[in-house]
Amino acid sequence: MKNTSAIALTWFAAILLFLGFMLMSSSGSFFVYVLAALFVVVPAIFGTKKIRIFAIVLLLTAIFLAMNKYPEFKSESDKYSRRGKISQINPDHFHRNLTFYSGGQSGVS
Image (cartoon, rainbow, N blue to C red):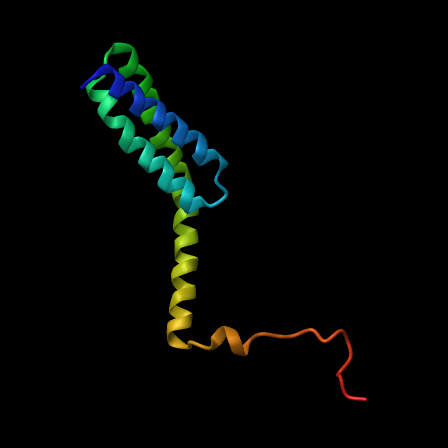
């Protein structure tokens, strides 16, 4: 692997880790951490000594952050799945449960 390619992949993984910190969605953060780990695997194996050390540190960081974010990701995906199942069973479930606020007036005089 070319040294410039290893450097580019390593820095791209570092940027992805930084973006993962800024995301509010646990699903998005988890996906970005896993993606960063995938990008940094190749430089961790085939990079030069300095790049390999930095890539291994980033790889371990990405794995740790992904493992730490997984319970939140699982909870969010379960909620999404349950919401989808409810709307499949009863498609107009959300429409019937809407309550409109009329400001305390019934509109009839």
